[in-house]
Structures are given as structure tokens and as C-alpha cells.
Image (cartoon, rainbow, N blue to C red):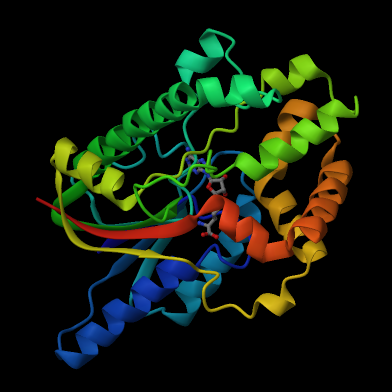
Length: 305
Ligand SMILES: C[S@@+](CC[C@H](N)C(=O)[O-])C[C@H]1O[C@@H](n2cnc3c(N)ncnc32)[C@H](O)[C@@H]1O
């Protein structure tokens, strides 16, 4: 049985999904008294990921499951391209990745339309157009992702995906994008002259958070998979909000956006975190952030038709 996690990253979470999958396979085999299958575990991320640490953890996983996990490996590359040979995969998982687009919406970048105009009037005038451009890019990318995985999975093969999305199709009037607060903060930094206005106007955060309805529609339209289960949840709902200080939240936001921001603007992360913390302190920390974005996690379990 060949299983893979796409967009595994390299921190302590890199093996979480595949380890859970291996445990589930083993306990299923025990429960039904089947001999466990030979398992192959593959981890993917972009080529710049730190695979050294990932490889070491894979060796530990294989050693601690040495009767079942026979092969481990890494497959560097974009999940918006082919990663595995045809009909070779049984389970593909991916957590917290598919809201990351393959690129900024072409219609905006080609026509030099800023994704987030610092001028509020101009921003509201273009809101629908910008949202639609992002939604189109997501549809294109996610459809491609489904087509590619359809080729790679065996008939009946399964996928479990989670990504950042929106709570519902009804977009709150003040909701712009899942990256809105990051864009606002960069706008403040641009207004202070720390980053050039032209640099800010040509910055597109390649992220889009779909609603569950939108995700379902794309899966059904693409047609290779049936939906076995879909859940929408707010991971912050059960958290003790008192623990999340503005400074902790600012660091969190910094960690999420750092690679994209640094690539475009250079060393502005200290200023980004300072402005974020100040803003969160003024606006009521997590409560304020939560109210503005209506962000949710969408999780979907799919079976290849
Ligand atoms: C937010 S992290 C999530 C990491 C991990 N899956 C988790 O849940 O903790 C996103 C990861 O996706 C990777 N990634 C982004 N775009 C990708 C792509 N097109 N193909 C493969 N990996 C990608 C990034 O390099 C990063 O490691």
C-alpha cells in the first residue's frame, strides 16, 4: 500500500499524517486479523523544503514499524504537477496546503491591477473583480490537482485533504480575502514609506480560501472523485482565547506569510510583526481578527470513482 502526504513541510508535523495513516492500517489489520500490507510512505513538498530533517524522521518511522513500513522516500516537486507514476497510489493526504495557489491570478498581474488597493474607494470598486480573479485561479489549480491525482491513484484510491477556507458562501460585507489582514498591515508599512508603493501594488498573495459549497462544486464538476465526507470547522473555537496574546498572534501571522513577504519585499518581517501586534492590541486580539475574516478549515475525504 503506497501512501503520501503532499506539502509535508519539515517541522515536527512533517510525519503526523502519514504516521496516523500507518497506525490506522495496522489497527485495521489487527482488528480483522488480516496480515498487514507492506507499506510504502512518500513525502512531498517543494524542492526548497528542508528534506534532510524529513529523511531522518522517515528512517525513524521505518525502524519503529520495521515489519510493515518497508519503503520510505521523498518526492520533491509541486503538487500542481505529476508526482507519481500512473495507478500507483492508494492514499494521498494533504493538510493545510491547497489554499496556496500555483501563482497569483493572471488576470490581475497581467493587467497590473493591485489585489489590495490602499485607497478604500478603489478597493471596494474592484472587490468583486479581484475576488472573482482569485476564485478562478483557485478553480483552475484545484481542478488540475484533482486531475493529476486521479491519474496517480489506483481505482478506489482515497484522498484526505484539508485547507483553509471560509465558513460559508455568504461573504460578510467586510470580508475580502483570507489574507486581508496581512495586506492591510503591509499597506500600513507602505504608507510609512518602509516599502515602496509600487512594490506594494505589484504584490499578490497567492492564497484563496473557498467555501465548502465552492469546493464541492469543483469536485463534482471535475468528476473523478466522490465525496465521502466533508467537514467545516473553526480550529480556534475550542481554544482558550486568553492564551493568545497579540504578540503570539503577530508571530503566528508572521510565520504564515513570511516566505511570500520576504521573497517580494526583503527584510520587513520585524516591522510586519510590530505593526500586526499593535493593530491586534487595538482591535481586541483574536476576537477582532476572528470577526473580520470568518476563516474556517475545510476537510474532505474523497474516493476515486
Ligand atoms: C502551511 S504549510 C503546511 C505544512 C503541513 N502540511 C502542516 O499541515 O503542518 C504549507 C506547505 O506546503 C508547501 N507547498 C506550497 N505549495 C506547494 C506546492 N505547489 N507543491 C508542494 N508543496 C507546496 C510549502 O512549501 C509548505 O511546506
